[in-house]
Image 1 (cartoon, rainbow, N blue to C red):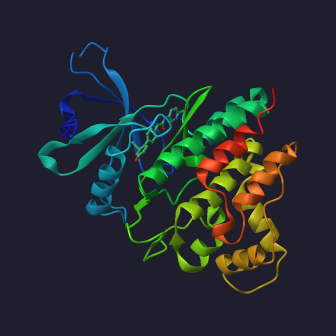
Image 2: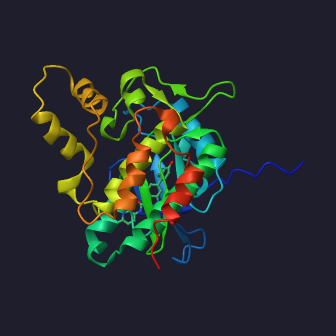
Length: 295
Ligand SMILES: CCc1cc(O)ccc1-c1ccc2c(C(=O)Nc3ccc(C)nc3)n[nH]c2c1
């Protein structure tokens, strides 16, 4: 019986703040150097503190730590440990630091030099990460380019497990009780209408990430903006979610990004099958994506 890996504890006195990494999608994340020798040779780490004022409870935070510390995959951001701050008033999550930030920020700087095959490499890495998550019975629920981090010009990793859930063994989906801040423009129809989340709803969101990738994360092609533009001309008094759901029921989908290879657009459309049963699995998506790579 292998010994359960000891959870690494980082001593707050050696955790030196360097800069903020943005209050974006991950809550407030800080760049720190863990420098026990005090000579700046320590490693850079990303640290997130439980936000006492946010609706996320300590239980949510403990679940995030439990989730991420159990995942070991090259395409998932690595957990490093936790730091109990003075008097254990709050706990900090310590993760590996990815120097290029989110896919959105990376594309802003590098979109002119990114070719189709590199986009497909990133897509296949996200597929492999999601295939691993599925094998651990985790549903991410917030797969989006903003939650993909860039380790290098040839490696991306899936991040942010604040929303992910474990599917009970006897069920194929997870139903949330409260919608919270829903990124509905990345949601499958069953997630919008019934708050049902499954590996198949993660596949739908993967299709939206493909769209973001092949739009080079251009803000003018952002899924939320394109949906609202379409809804805006779709006169209905119903809520945004109901109007989006009706559009999807009438087979409207995000338009193919310009210069998107037809084979890649076809993969997106398979991810956006209305009935989750008709969507590909992440393991077949991996093959579909690799089949799009040109020599
Ligand atoms: C600790 C929070 C967390 C919690 C979780 O469950 C999963 C991943 C993360 C996380 C979130 C962000 C980062 C980052 C970064 O933001 N890096 C960067 C680099 C450069 C620039 C400009 N911006 C940004 N690096 N590792 C990170 C891990």
